[in-house]
Image 1: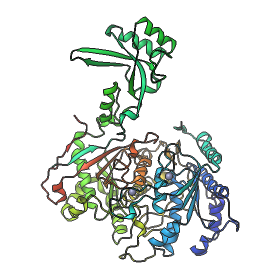
Image 2: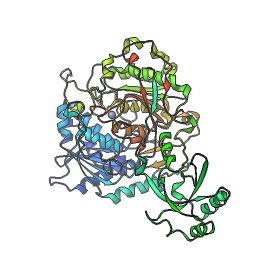
Image 3: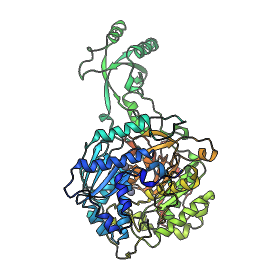
Image 4: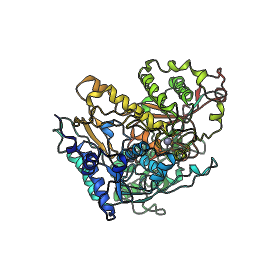
Length: 218
Length: 418
Ligand SMILES: [Zn+2]
Ligand SMILES: [Zn+2]
Protein backbone atom coordinates (compact mmCIF):
# COMPACT_ATOMS: atom_id res chain seq x y z
CA UNK A 1 0.00 0.00 0.00
CA UNK A 2 1.46 3.28 -1.06
CA UNK A 3 0.18 6.62 -0.04
CA UNK A 4 1.11 10.09 -0.96
CA UNK A 5 3.66 11.26 1.54
CA UNK A 6 2.02 14.65 1.76
CA UNK A 7 -1.02 13.13 3.42
CA UNK A 8 1.05 12.20 6.38
CA UNK A 9 2.76 15.51 6.90
CA UNK A 10 1.48 18.39 8.94
CA UNK A 11 0.85 21.64 7.08
CA UNK A 12 4.24 23.20 7.61
CA UNK A 13 6.04 20.18 6.19
CA UNK A 14 3.73 20.18 3.22
CA UNK A 15 4.58 23.75 2.55
CA UNK A 16 8.29 23.16 2.82
CA UNK A 17 7.99 20.20 0.47
CA UNK A 18 6.04 22.17 -2.08
CA UNK A 19 8.80 24.71 -2.37
CA UNK A 20 11.58 22.21 -1.96
CA UNK A 21 12.58 22.63 -5.59
CA UNK A 22 13.77 26.08 -4.69
CA UNK A 23 17.25 26.64 -3.29
CA UNK A 24 17.61 26.40 0.46
CA UNK A 25 17.86 30.13 0.89
CA UNK A 26 14.28 30.41 -0.36
CA UNK A 27 13.06 27.73 1.99
CA UNK A 28 14.54 29.73 4.79
CA UNK A 29 12.42 32.73 3.98
CA UNK A 30 9.30 30.75 4.74
CA UNK A 31 6.97 33.12 6.47
CA UNK A 32 3.69 32.66 8.18
CA UNK A 33 2.34 36.15 8.04
CA UNK A 34 3.72 39.64 8.08
CA UNK A 35 2.51 40.40 11.60
CA UNK A 36 4.63 39.28 14.53
CA UNK A 37 3.06 36.05 15.66
CA UNK A 38 2.12 35.41 19.27
CA UNK A 39 3.69 32.49 21.11
CA UNK A 40 0.49 30.46 20.83
CA UNK A 41 0.56 30.63 17.04
CA UNK A 42 4.01 29.05 16.97
CA UNK A 43 2.97 26.58 19.62
CA UNK A 44 0.06 25.50 17.43
CA UNK A 45 2.56 24.65 14.73
CA UNK A 46 4.60 22.70 17.26
CA UNK A 47 1.41 20.87 18.25
CA UNK A 48 0.84 19.97 14.59
CA UNK A 49 4.26 18.38 14.64
CA UNK A 50 3.37 16.49 17.79
CA UNK A 51 0.20 15.20 16.13
CA UNK A 52 2.31 14.06 13.21
CA UNK A 53 4.41 12.06 15.66
CA UNK A 54 1.27 10.60 17.19
CA UNK A 55 0.03 9.51 13.75
CA UNK A 56 3.31 7.70 13.28
CA UNK A 57 3.05 5.90 16.61
CA UNK A 58 5.71 8.06 18.14
CA UNK A 59 5.42 9.73 21.52
CA UNK A 60 3.70 13.00 20.57
CA UNK A 61 6.22 15.79 20.99
CA UNK A 62 6.81 18.41 18.32
CA UNK A 63 8.64 21.69 17.91
CA UNK A 64 9.39 24.58 15.58
CA UNK A 65 12.41 26.88 15.49
CA UNK A 66 11.74 30.52 14.80
CA UNK A 67 14.07 33.22 13.50
CA UNK A 68 12.94 36.82 13.02
CA UNK A 69 9.33 35.83 13.49
CA UNK A 70 9.52 33.12 10.85
CA UNK A 71 9.48 29.37 11.26
CA UNK A 72 12.71 28.06 9.77
CA UNK A 73 12.59 24.43 10.92
CA UNK A 74 10.28 21.92 12.51
CA UNK A 75 10.71 18.52 14.08
CA UNK A 76 8.78 15.72 15.67
CA UNK A 77 9.87 12.89 17.87
CA UNK A 78 11.22 9.90 15.89
CA UNK A 79 12.66 7.58 18.49
CA UNK A 80 10.86 4.48 17.23
CA UNK A 81 11.47 4.92 13.53
CA UNK A 82 15.16 5.47 14.15
CA UNK A 83 15.50 3.05 17.10
CA UNK A 84 17.50 5.86 18.59
CA UNK A 85 15.90 7.12 21.80
CA UNK A 86 17.79 10.39 21.51
CA UNK A 87 15.96 11.45 18.34
CA UNK A 88 13.70 13.89 20.13
CA UNK A 89 11.78 16.56 18.24
CA UNK A 90 14.36 19.20 19.18
CA UNK A 91 17.22 17.14 17.75
CA UNK A 92 15.32 16.59 14.51
CA UNK A 93 14.70 20.30 14.02
CA UNK A 94 18.27 21.21 14.94
CA UNK A 95 19.61 18.80 12.32
CA UNK A 96 17.40 20.35 9.64
CA UNK A 97 19.03 23.71 10.31
CA UNK A 98 22.57 22.41 10.58
CA UNK A 99 22.27 20.61 7.28
CA UNK A 100 20.85 23.60 5.56
CA UNK A 101 23.37 26.05 6.97
CA UNK A 102 26.29 23.81 6.16
CA UNK A 103 25.01 23.26 2.65
CA UNK A 104 25.14 26.99 1.98
CA UNK A 105 28.66 27.12 3.35
CA UNK A 106 28.23 28.64 6.80
CA UNK A 107 31.16 27.90 9.08
CA UNK A 108 31.11 27.30 12.83
CA UNK A 109 31.18 30.96 13.77
CA UNK A 110 28.32 31.85 11.45
CA UNK A 111 26.24 28.87 12.54
CA UNK A 112 26.74 29.91 16.16
CA UNK A 113 25.56 33.42 15.27
CA UNK A 114 22.48 31.99 13.58
CA UNK A 115 21.50 29.88 16.61
CA UNK A 116 21.91 32.92 18.84
CA UNK A 117 19.02 34.51 16.96
CA UNK A 118 16.69 31.50 17.14
CA UNK A 119 13.84 30.64 19.48
CA UNK A 120 12.42 27.17 20.04
CA UNK A 121 8.74 26.33 20.60
CA UNK A 122 8.27 22.79 21.86
CA UNK A 123 5.15 21.09 23.18
CA UNK A 124 6.86 19.52 26.22
CA UNK A 125 9.66 20.84 28.43
CA UNK A 126 13.01 19.87 26.89
CA UNK A 127 14.58 16.88 28.61
CA UNK A 128 17.97 17.10 30.30
CA UNK A 129 19.68 16.02 27.10
CA UNK A 130 17.90 18.49 24.86
CA UNK A 131 18.20 21.35 27.35
CA UNK A 132 21.97 20.75 27.47
CA UNK A 133 22.05 20.63 23.68
CA UNK A 134 20.15 23.91 23.39
CA UNK A 135 22.62 25.50 25.77
CA UNK A 136 25.56 24.12 23.76
CA UNK A 137 24.09 25.59 20.58
CA UNK A 138 23.44 28.92 22.29
CA UNK A 139 19.80 29.18 21.34
CA UNK A 140 18.20 32.46 22.42
CA UNK A 141 14.89 31.52 23.98
CA UNK A 142 12.72 28.46 24.63
CA UNK A 143 8.94 28.28 24.99
CA UNK A 144 7.40 25.00 26.05
CA UNK A 145 3.97 23.55 26.72
CA UNK A 146 3.66 21.06 29.54
CA UNK A 147 6.35 20.33 32.12
CA UNK A 148 8.33 17.09 31.98
CA UNK A 149 8.34 15.80 35.56
CA UNK A 150 10.60 12.85 34.94
CA UNK A 151 13.24 14.17 32.57
CA UNK A 152 12.79 17.93 32.34
CA UNK A 153 15.98 19.94 32.02
CA UNK A 154 14.39 23.40 32.24
CA UNK A 155 13.28 23.41 35.85
CA UNK A 156 11.61 20.06 36.57
CA UNK A 157 14.57 17.78 37.30
CA UNK A 158 17.50 20.02 36.43
CA UNK A 159 17.77 23.70 35.47
CA UNK A 160 20.16 23.71 32.56
CA UNK A 161 18.61 26.87 31.14
CA UNK A 162 20.01 28.84 34.04
CA UNK A 163 23.51 29.92 33.25
CA UNK A 164 26.01 28.53 35.63
CA UNK A 165 29.50 29.89 35.84
CA UNK A 166 31.58 26.85 36.51
CA UNK A 167 35.03 27.27 37.89
CA UNK A 168 37.07 28.28 34.97
CA UNK A 169 39.36 25.33 35.11
CA UNK A 170 40.63 25.60 31.61
CA UNK A 171 41.36 29.27 31.81
CA UNK A 172 38.95 30.00 29.02
CA UNK A 173 35.50 31.45 28.77
CA UNK A 174 34.41 28.70 26.45
CA UNK A 175 33.60 26.30 29.24
CA UNK A 176 30.99 28.42 30.93
CA UNK A 177 27.58 26.94 30.74
CA UNK A 178 25.29 29.32 28.93
CA UNK A 179 21.69 29.68 29.80
CA UNK A 180 18.69 30.66 27.77
CA UNK A 181 15.43 32.34 28.61
CA UNK A 182 12.72 29.79 29.17
CA UNK A 183 8.93 30.12 29.41
CA UNK A 184 6.66 27.17 30.13
CA UNK A 185 2.94 26.49 30.21
CA UNK A 186 2.03 27.65 26.71
CA UNK A 187 -0.95 25.57 25.52
CA UNK A 188 0.02 22.92 28.05
CA UNK A 189 -3.43 21.27 28.06
CA UNK A 190 -3.24 20.60 24.34
CA UNK A 191 0.18 19.00 24.74
CA UNK A 192 -1.00 16.87 27.64
CA UNK A 193 -4.11 15.83 25.70
CA UNK A 194 -1.89 14.39 22.98
CA UNK A 195 0.06 12.38 25.56
CA UNK A 196 -3.23 11.13 26.95
CA UNK A 197 -4.30 10.09 23.47
CA UNK A 198 -1.07 8.23 23.03
CA UNK A 199 -1.17 6.40 26.33
CA UNK A 200 -4.86 5.72 26.70
CA UNK A 201 -6.23 4.88 23.33
CA UNK A 202 -3.13 4.69 21.23
CA UNK A 203 -3.24 5.80 17.66
CA UNK A 204 -6.81 5.73 16.29
CA UNK A 205 -5.45 5.07 12.80
CA UNK A 206 -3.37 2.12 13.90
CA UNK A 207 -4.58 -1.42 13.24
CA UNK A 208 -6.20 -3.09 16.23
CA UNK A 209 -3.36 -3.95 18.52
CA UNK A 210 -2.82 -7.67 18.92
CA UNK A 211 -0.49 -7.02 21.74
CA UNK A 212 -1.00 -5.56 25.16
CA UNK A 213 -0.43 -1.88 25.54
CA UNK A 214 1.58 -1.44 28.64
CA UNK A 215 1.49 1.87 30.40
CA UNK A 216 4.30 2.60 32.78
CA UNK A 217 3.08 6.08 33.31
CA UNK A 218 2.12 6.81 36.89
CA UNK B 1 49.84 0.74 40.42
CA UNK B 2 47.32 -1.52 38.78
CA UNK B 3 44.06 -1.01 36.91
CA UNK B 4 41.28 -0.20 39.33
CA UNK B 5 37.54 -0.11 39.09
CA UNK B 6 35.51 2.10 41.44
CA UNK B 7 31.78 2.51 41.45
CA UNK B 8 30.62 6.13 41.32
CA UNK B 9 27.55 6.16 43.56
CA UNK B 10 24.52 7.98 42.28
CA UNK B 11 23.54 9.50 45.55
CA UNK B 12 26.21 10.64 47.95
CA UNK B 13 23.98 13.31 49.47
CA UNK B 14 24.60 13.67 53.19
CA UNK B 15 22.23 11.53 55.18
CA UNK B 16 21.11 14.33 57.48
CA UNK B 17 19.21 15.83 54.54
CA UNK B 18 17.26 12.70 53.83
CA UNK B 19 15.87 11.38 57.09
CA UNK B 20 12.42 11.27 58.63
CA UNK B 21 11.48 11.14 62.28
CA UNK B 22 9.71 8.11 63.67
CA UNK B 23 8.41 7.26 67.12
CA UNK B 24 10.17 4.22 68.52
CA UNK B 25 10.39 2.41 71.83
CA UNK B 26 12.69 -0.10 73.46
CA UNK B 27 11.18 -3.55 73.90
CA UNK B 28 12.08 -6.87 75.47
CA UNK B 29 13.03 -9.75 73.15
CA UNK B 30 10.15 -12.07 73.95
CA UNK B 31 7.45 -9.66 72.71
CA UNK B 32 9.29 -8.71 69.51
CA UNK B 33 7.44 -10.97 67.08
CA UNK B 34 4.05 -10.18 68.55
CA UNK B 35 4.67 -6.47 68.36
CA UNK B 36 6.00 -6.59 64.80
CA UNK B 37 2.86 -8.44 63.74
CA UNK B 38 0.50 -6.07 65.53
CA UNK B 39 2.24 -2.89 64.41
CA UNK B 40 2.50 -4.01 60.80
CA UNK B 41 -1.26 -4.37 60.89
CA UNK B 42 -2.28 -1.19 62.66
CA UNK B 43 0.52 1.05 61.43
CA UNK B 44 2.36 -0.26 58.37
CA UNK B 45 5.34 1.82 57.26
CA UNK B 46 4.00 2.33 53.75
CA UNK B 47 6.57 4.74 52.39
CA UNK B 48 9.43 3.35 54.40
CA UNK B 49 9.50 -0.21 53.13
CA UNK B 50 13.29 -0.18 53.11
CA UNK B 51 13.37 0.55 56.86
CA UNK B 52 13.49 -2.41 59.21
CA UNK B 53 10.91 -2.31 61.93
CA UNK B 54 13.27 -3.43 64.68
CA UNK B 55 16.77 -2.27 65.52
CA UNK B 56 19.15 -4.36 67.58
CA UNK B 57 22.05 -2.49 69.09
CA UNK B 58 24.84 -3.56 71.35
CA UNK B 59 25.08 -1.22 74.30
CA UNK B 60 27.75 -1.18 76.96
CA UNK B 61 29.66 -3.89 75.16
CA UNK B 62 27.50 -6.86 76.05
CA UNK B 63 23.77 -6.17 76.40
CA UNK B 64 21.85 -5.85 73.21
CA UNK B 65 19.03 -3.36 73.06
CA UNK B 66 15.95 -3.90 70.93
CA UNK B 67 13.91 -0.97 69.63
CA UNK B 68 10.83 -1.01 67.47
CA UNK B 69 9.29 1.67 65.26
CA UNK B 70 5.75 2.45 66.45
CA UNK B 71 4.70 4.98 63.83
CA UNK B 72 5.82 8.07 61.97
CA UNK B 73 6.35 11.12 64.15
CA UNK B 74 3.81 13.88 63.72
CA UNK B 75 5.98 16.62 65.14
CA UNK B 76 9.52 17.19 66.27
CA UNK B 77 8.91 17.26 70.00
CA UNK B 78 5.91 15.23 70.89
CA UNK B 79 6.57 11.59 71.28
CA UNK B 80 3.67 10.90 73.59
CA UNK B 81 0.71 12.31 71.71
CA UNK B 82 -0.88 12.13 68.36
CA UNK B 83 -0.43 8.40 67.84
CA UNK B 84 -3.06 6.35 66.18
CA UNK B 85 -5.36 4.89 68.82
CA UNK B 86 -4.18 1.33 68.29
CA UNK B 87 -0.58 2.37 68.73
CA UNK B 88 -1.50 4.19 71.92
CA UNK B 89 -3.05 0.96 73.20
CA UNK B 90 0.12 -0.98 72.48
CA UNK B 91 2.19 1.64 74.28
CA UNK B 92 -0.03 1.29 77.33
CA UNK B 93 -0.32 -2.50 77.28
CA UNK B 94 3.43 -3.06 77.02
CA UNK B 95 4.45 -0.10 79.22
CA UNK B 96 6.59 1.40 76.46
CA UNK B 97 8.47 4.69 76.66
CA UNK B 98 8.35 6.21 73.19
CA UNK B 99 11.20 8.29 71.84
CA UNK B 100 11.97 10.00 68.54
CA UNK B 101 14.40 8.33 66.19
CA UNK B 102 15.65 9.20 62.72
CA UNK B 103 15.54 6.82 59.80
CA UNK B 104 16.65 7.17 56.18
CA UNK B 105 13.78 8.38 54.04
CA UNK B 106 14.86 6.63 50.84
CA UNK B 107 16.39 3.26 50.12
CA UNK B 108 20.12 3.26 49.61
CA UNK B 109 21.53 3.41 46.10
CA UNK B 110 24.96 2.13 47.04
CA UNK B 111 26.45 -0.09 49.67
CA UNK B 112 28.38 2.87 51.00
CA UNK B 113 25.16 4.78 51.51
CA UNK B 114 23.44 1.76 53.03
CA UNK B 115 26.15 1.37 55.65
CA UNK B 116 25.71 4.98 56.59
CA UNK B 117 21.93 4.56 56.84
CA UNK B 118 22.28 1.55 59.11
CA UNK B 119 24.20 3.58 61.63
CA UNK B 120 20.94 5.48 62.19
CA UNK B 121 18.48 2.65 61.89
CA UNK B 122 18.80 -0.57 59.90
CA UNK B 123 17.46 -0.57 56.35
CA UNK B 124 17.43 -3.22 53.69
CA UNK B 125 19.52 -2.83 50.57
CA UNK B 126 18.89 -4.21 47.13
CA UNK B 127 21.74 -3.44 44.78
CA UNK B 128 20.53 -2.12 41.42
CA UNK B 129 21.99 -5.05 39.50
CA UNK B 130 22.08 -7.83 42.05
CA UNK B 131 22.12 -10.48 39.33
CA UNK B 132 25.66 -9.43 38.62
CA UNK B 133 26.87 -9.23 42.15
CA UNK B 134 26.81 -6.52 44.72
CA UNK B 135 28.04 -3.62 42.66
CA UNK B 136 27.09 -4.44 39.13
CA UNK B 137 30.03 -6.48 37.90
CA UNK B 138 31.59 -9.85 38.54
CA UNK B 139 35.15 -10.09 39.67
CA UNK B 140 36.00 -12.29 36.68
CA UNK B 141 34.75 -9.60 34.33
CA UNK B 142 37.50 -7.21 35.39
CA UNK B 143 40.12 -8.22 32.79
CA UNK B 144 37.69 -7.74 29.93
CA UNK B 145 36.37 -4.48 31.40
CA UNK B 146 39.91 -3.12 31.57
CA UNK B 147 40.56 -4.43 28.11
CA UNK B 148 37.58 -2.55 26.70
CA UNK B 149 38.83 0.65 28.26
CA UNK B 150 42.29 0.10 26.83
CA UNK B 151 40.69 -0.36 23.44
CA UNK B 152 38.77 2.89 23.81
CA UNK B 153 41.92 4.74 24.85
CA UNK B 154 43.84 3.35 21.92
CA UNK B 155 41.18 4.60 19.54
CA UNK B 156 41.21 7.99 21.17
CA UNK B 157 43.57 9.93 18.93
CA UNK B 158 41.81 13.26 19.36
CA UNK B 159 38.98 14.09 21.72
CA UNK B 160 36.79 11.51 23.39
CA UNK B 161 36.07 7.98 22.27
CA UNK B 162 33.06 5.80 23.04
CA UNK B 163 32.67 2.09 22.45
CA UNK B 164 29.48 0.15 23.03
CA UNK B 165 29.90 -3.46 24.08
CA UNK B 166 27.41 -6.27 24.60
CA UNK B 167 28.90 -7.85 27.74
CA UNK B 168 27.01 -11.12 27.24
CA UNK B 169 28.92 -11.86 24.04
CA UNK B 170 31.83 -9.43 24.39
CA UNK B 171 30.86 -8.12 20.99
CA UNK B 172 31.60 -4.54 20.09
CA UNK B 173 28.35 -2.99 18.93
CA UNK B 174 29.71 0.36 17.82
CA UNK B 175 32.45 2.87 18.39
CA UNK B 176 32.82 6.54 17.70
CA UNK B 177 34.93 9.61 18.32
CA UNK B 178 34.00 13.24 18.81
CA UNK B 179 32.85 14.85 15.56
CA UNK B 180 32.17 18.38 16.69
CA UNK B 181 34.96 19.59 14.43
CA UNK B 182 35.74 18.93 10.85
CA UNK B 183 38.62 16.53 10.70
CA UNK B 184 40.25 14.79 7.78
CA UNK B 185 40.00 11.45 9.41
CA UNK B 186 36.85 11.50 11.41
CA UNK B 187 34.25 10.65 8.81
CA UNK B 188 36.29 8.01 7.11
CA UNK B 189 37.45 6.67 10.41
CA UNK B 190 34.00 6.16 11.76
CA UNK B 191 32.81 4.53 8.60
CA UNK B 192 35.59 1.98 8.89
CA UNK B 193 34.85 1.59 12.54
CA UNK B 194 31.31 0.61 11.72
CA UNK B 195 32.43 -2.12 9.34
CA UNK B 196 34.93 -3.34 11.84
CA UNK B 197 32.37 -3.31 14.59
CA UNK B 198 30.03 -5.44 12.52
CA UNK B 199 32.67 -8.10 12.12
CA UNK B 200 33.99 -7.79 15.58
CA UNK B 201 33.05 -11.20 16.87
CA UNK B 202 36.54 -11.69 18.11
CA UNK B 203 36.61 -8.41 19.94
CA UNK B 204 38.59 -7.45 21.92
CA UNK B 205 41.59 -9.34 20.61
CA UNK B 206 41.22 -7.82 17.16
CA UNK B 207 42.49 -4.46 18.24
CA UNK B 208 45.12 -5.68 20.65
CA UNK B 209 47.87 -5.89 18.04
CA UNK B 210 47.64 -2.25 17.23
CA UNK B 211 48.13 -1.24 20.82
CA UNK B 212 51.64 0.11 20.48
CA UNK B 213 51.03 2.17 17.41
CA UNK B 214 47.73 3.60 18.57
CA UNK B 215 48.58 4.50 22.11
CA UNK B 216 48.37 8.27 22.26
CA UNK B 217 50.88 10.39 23.97
CA UNK B 218 50.55 10.18 27.69
CA UNK B 219 50.38 13.93 28.20
CA UNK B 220 46.89 14.04 26.71
CA UNK B 221 45.53 11.86 29.46
CA UNK B 222 47.76 13.00 32.28
CA UNK B 223 47.02 16.69 32.06
CA UNK B 224 43.60 16.10 33.50
CA UNK B 225 41.89 18.38 31.01
CA UNK B 226 41.82 17.93 27.30
CA UNK B 227 40.12 20.82 25.60
CA UNK B 228 39.78 18.82 22.42
CA UNK B 229 37.24 16.63 24.25
CA UNK B 230 33.76 17.79 23.26
CA UNK B 231 32.20 16.97 26.62
CA UNK B 232 34.83 19.01 28.47
CA UNK B 233 34.65 21.97 26.12
CA UNK B 234 31.10 21.84 24.73
CA UNK B 235 31.22 25.39 23.41
CA UNK B 236 34.47 24.81 21.56
CA UNK B 237 32.59 23.90 18.40
CA UNK B 238 31.84 27.59 17.80
CA UNK B 239 35.45 28.34 17.01
CA UNK B 240 36.48 28.02 13.41
CA UNK B 241 39.73 26.10 13.14
CA UNK B 242 42.24 27.46 10.71
CA UNK B 243 43.03 23.98 9.49
CA UNK B 244 39.49 23.38 8.42
CA UNK B 245 38.54 23.87 4.83
CA UNK B 246 35.20 25.14 3.76
CA UNK B 247 33.87 22.11 1.98
CA UNK B 248 30.22 21.59 1.32
CA UNK B 249 28.82 18.42 2.82
CA UNK B 250 27.38 15.73 0.65
CA UNK B 251 23.62 15.99 0.46
CA UNK B 252 22.03 15.23 3.78
CA UNK B 253 25.33 14.96 5.58
CA UNK B 254 27.27 17.03 8.04
CA UNK B 255 30.85 18.19 7.94
CA UNK B 256 30.81 18.67 11.66
CA UNK B 257 28.06 18.77 14.23
CA UNK B 258 28.05 20.74 17.50
CA UNK B 259 26.23 17.91 19.30
CA UNK B 260 28.17 14.97 17.94
CA UNK B 261 30.02 14.10 21.08
CA UNK B 262 31.46 10.59 20.95
CA UNK B 263 28.63 9.04 22.99
CA UNK B 264 25.93 10.58 20.80
CA UNK B 265 27.62 9.28 17.64
CA UNK B 266 28.14 5.84 19.15
CA UNK B 267 24.44 5.65 20.00
CA UNK B 268 23.47 6.57 16.43
CA UNK B 269 25.92 4.00 15.07
CA UNK B 270 24.36 1.35 17.32
CA UNK B 271 20.88 2.39 16.18
CA UNK B 272 21.96 2.18 12.57
CA UNK B 273 23.36 -1.29 13.18
CA UNK B 274 20.00 -2.22 14.71
CA UNK B 275 18.13 -0.89 11.68
CA UNK B 276 20.42 -2.78 9.33
CA UNK B 277 20.41 -6.03 11.27
CA UNK B 278 16.66 -6.11 11.77
CA UNK B 279 15.27 -4.23 8.79
CA UNK B 280 11.97 -6.09 8.75
CA UNK B 281 10.45 -3.92 11.37
CA UNK B 282 11.94 -0.67 10.18
CA UNK B 283 9.57 2.15 9.71
CA UNK B 284 9.70 4.40 6.71
CA UNK B 285 11.17 7.75 7.47
CA UNK B 286 14.87 7.36 7.87
CA UNK B 287 17.46 9.73 9.08
CA UNK B 288 20.55 10.90 7.26
CA UNK B 289 23.43 8.76 8.40
CA UNK B 290 26.22 10.22 10.41
CA UNK B 291 28.82 9.19 7.88
CA UNK B 292 27.38 11.60 5.40
CA UNK B 293 25.36 9.22 3.25
CA UNK B 294 21.70 9.82 2.76
CA UNK B 295 19.49 6.92 3.54
CA UNK B 296 16.55 7.81 1.38
CA UNK B 297 15.62 4.40 0.05
CA UNK B 298 12.29 4.18 1.79
CA UNK B 299 11.40 7.80 2.11
CA UNK B 300 8.20 7.55 0.12
CA UNK B 301 6.82 4.43 1.70
CA UNK B 302 4.08 4.61 4.27
CA UNK B 303 5.21 3.77 7.72
CA UNK B 304 5.01 0.11 8.42
CA UNK B 305 3.27 -0.13 11.70
CA UNK B 306 5.78 -0.76 14.38
CA UNK B 307 4.92 -3.16 17.11
CA UNK B 308 5.02 -0.84 19.99
CA UNK B 309 4.19 -0.94 23.63
CA UNK B 310 3.47 2.46 25.00
CA UNK B 311 5.99 3.17 27.64
CA UNK B 312 6.44 6.61 29.04
CA UNK B 313 6.82 10.25 28.30
CA UNK B 314 10.38 9.77 27.33
CA UNK B 315 9.67 10.01 23.62
CA UNK B 316 10.37 6.33 23.13
CA UNK B 317 8.50 3.09 23.20
CA UNK B 318 9.22 -0.59 23.51
CA UNK B 319 8.90 -2.78 20.49
CA UNK B 320 6.93 -5.82 21.58
CA UNK B 321 8.01 -9.36 20.87
CA UNK B 322 7.06 -10.55 17.48
CA UNK B 323 6.60 -14.11 16.38
CA UNK B 324 9.63 -14.34 14.13
CA UNK B 325 12.88 -15.30 15.77
CA UNK B 326 15.25 -12.59 14.53
CA UNK B 327 12.90 -9.95 15.75
CA UNK B 328 12.88 -11.51 19.18
CA UNK B 329 16.66 -11.41 19.31
CA UNK B 330 16.60 -7.78 18.49
CA UNK B 331 17.84 -5.66 21.36
CA UNK B 332 15.62 -2.91 22.67
CA UNK B 333 17.80 0.16 22.22
CA UNK B 334 21.00 -0.54 24.16
CA UNK B 335 19.38 -2.49 27.00
CA UNK B 336 21.97 -4.70 28.66
CA UNK B 337 24.87 -3.01 26.88
CA UNK B 338 27.88 -1.27 28.37
CA UNK B 339 29.48 1.92 27.12
CA UNK B 340 33.13 2.82 27.63
CA UNK B 341 34.09 6.47 27.47
CA UNK B 342 37.63 7.71 27.86
CA UNK B 343 36.31 10.90 29.48
CA UNK B 344 33.35 11.35 31.78
CA UNK B 345 30.32 12.52 29.76
CA UNK B 346 28.60 15.92 29.95
CA UNK B 347 24.90 16.20 30.90
CA UNK B 348 23.75 15.91 27.29
CA UNK B 349 25.66 12.69 26.73
CA UNK B 350 24.84 11.24 30.16
CA UNK B 351 21.12 11.81 29.54
CA UNK B 352 21.43 10.31 26.05
CA UNK B 353 22.81 7.18 27.74
CA UNK B 354 19.75 7.11 30.02
CA UNK B 355 17.41 7.40 27.03
CA UNK B 356 19.16 4.59 25.19
CA UNK B 357 18.95 2.36 28.32
CA UNK B 358 22.55 1.41 28.88
CA UNK B 359 23.27 -0.97 31.70
CA UNK B 360 26.69 0.26 32.79
CA UNK B 361 28.84 3.27 32.02
CA UNK B 362 32.62 3.12 32.40
CA UNK B 363 34.90 6.11 32.11
CA UNK B 364 38.60 6.59 32.75
CA UNK B 365 39.11 10.31 33.28
CA UNK B 366 36.82 12.65 35.21
CA UNK B 367 35.47 15.78 33.58
CA UNK B 368 35.62 18.50 36.24
CA UNK B 369 34.03 21.12 33.95
CA UNK B 370 30.75 19.53 32.89
CA UNK B 371 30.97 15.92 34.12
CA UNK B 372 27.47 14.62 34.82
CA UNK B 373 28.38 11.28 36.39
CA UNK B 374 30.17 12.26 39.56
CA UNK B 375 32.31 15.33 38.93
CA UNK B 376 29.75 18.15 38.66
CA UNK B 377 26.38 16.38 38.63
CA UNK B 378 25.24 12.88 39.50
CA UNK B 379 22.61 12.32 36.88
CA UNK B 380 22.41 8.60 37.56
CA UNK B 381 21.17 9.38 41.06
CA UNK B 382 18.13 11.37 39.91
CA UNK B 383 15.23 9.35 41.18
CA UNK B 384 12.66 10.65 38.71
CA UNK B 385 14.41 9.10 35.72
CA UNK B 386 12.78 5.97 34.35
CA UNK B 387 16.07 4.17 33.85
CA UNK B 388 19.22 4.01 35.93
CA UNK B 389 22.58 2.68 34.93
CA UNK B 390 25.56 1.97 37.14
CA UNK B 391 28.61 4.16 36.74
CA UNK B 392 32.20 3.08 37.18
CA UNK B 393 35.44 4.91 36.99
CA UNK B 394 38.45 2.98 35.78
CA UNK B 395 41.74 4.21 37.14
CA UNK B 396 44.45 3.71 34.58
CA UNK B 397 47.94 2.95 35.86
CA UNK B 398 50.44 5.67 35.17
CA UNK B 399 52.83 3.13 33.78
CA UNK B 400 50.29 2.38 31.08
CA UNK B 401 49.87 6.04 30.24
CA UNK B 402 53.61 6.36 29.98
CA UNK B 403 53.63 3.68 27.36
CA UNK B 404 54.99 0.86 29.44
CA UNK B 405 53.62 -2.48 28.34
CA UNK B 406 54.41 -4.50 31.43
CA UNK B 407 51.91 -3.08 33.87
CA UNK B 408 49.55 -5.50 35.48
CA UNK B 409 46.69 -6.61 33.29
CA UNK B 410 44.89 -8.31 36.11
CA UNK B 411 43.90 -5.21 37.94
CA UNK B 412 41.76 -5.12 40.98
CA UNK B 413 38.56 -3.71 42.23
CA UNK B 414 38.60 -1.41 45.17
CA UNK B 415 34.88 -1.15 44.91
CA UNK B 416 32.49 -2.50 47.47
CA UNK B 417 33.64 -6.10 47.31
CA UNK B 418 34.66 -6.16 50.97
ZN1 LIG C 1 14.82 15.64 24.74
ZN1 LIG D 1 28.99 15.26 25.81
